[in-house]
Image 1: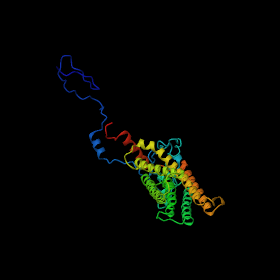
Image 2: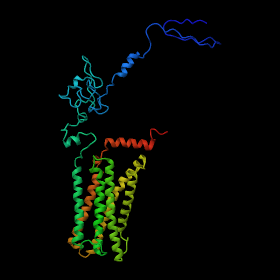
Image 3: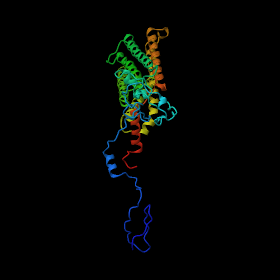
Length: 393
């Protein structure tokens, strides 16, 4: 058969007649303008040779998501980058915050607060005052990932340290001035090591370990965790020395063990403190716990940490009363100097626990997560809960 006649214009291929399986010959190209959307080959080649222009908005100090202004793609209207001299332009000359105003176009609505970037530095884009590049304020305040200490936190932490050191000083003075000092010989002087070690470990160091996340607000999360765990470990070691001292003294003096309320509360506080430290190390420092498991255990860890500090302070108060009744029972009611000193020590213990508890319960004093910590937390959650992006679901 001959070629099939086709109308001019858009090419169309007719199906072959029924029963005939031959292939139609190629058709002539349609006349008229080309309908192809691809540019000519020489245009494609020149486009491949042309260097790609990189957007400079992210490298000129504008946070992601802010509109880019200027002819050079930065967050300044003059297009000069971070070091562009001159005052910021009039916002009315910019027009709409979504599109750059063309000459002669009416001005658009003002941009939403916090989205328009008129000053050249990143801190200026975020509403911070620009400081000198070499100053400490520039390095700490101009960074959006850093936060200054809230008002009152520094004074509260300082007060807790003053009271805590006063507790240790009064305990040492009590054991040295009225109880004869400290020695490791099985006598009453060995028993005097027990109150001092327990106050240092189970009260002062435990409270300081709880305040680590309030004091070191701008340090990395892992460094803060390690310091938190090390302080608790040091407190456990010192408290263990105090327990060994009192048990050895009781054994050599043939005094029964674990019969008083003070001894019951003390052994419970030390045992739960050790378990709390092991669980915290396993969940938060050992890289085996999943994100959901850590999230579920964290509230319990925080609660039992504060509860153990309260239990430790209460146990210390019971121990003070027990020592006074065993040694100055006859003169205690007549305001003996040793009794007054011991009572003052008890009040300072309560004050230390109250100040630490107050700092821990202030929500605005909690440590804010840094930007890199939030990103790592989301990545860790994705890898542990949803699987790796390259692994089959």
